[in-house]
Length: 76
Ligand SMILES: [Zn+2]
Image (cartoon, rainbow, N blue to C red; front, side):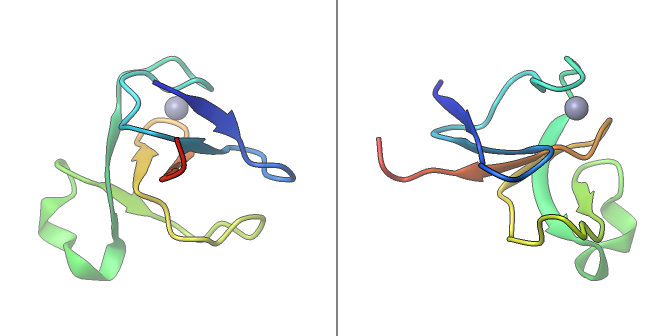
């Protein structure tokens, strides 16, 4: 897996596949990202995206423990 922190962000990373472990908190709680309004009843299965004032770009996965964001990087 390749992972690179996005310049200027606090907890956002570019990855080429879904990370197994969060590089910030070390927990294996990375889930596919869904916006909160889409699935209130699937809270356990997905990472619900909250407002990130410092980085609002859509993410592909997120850490349920510390809210780190992971974006798929298509350039290998
Ligand atoms: Zn985390």
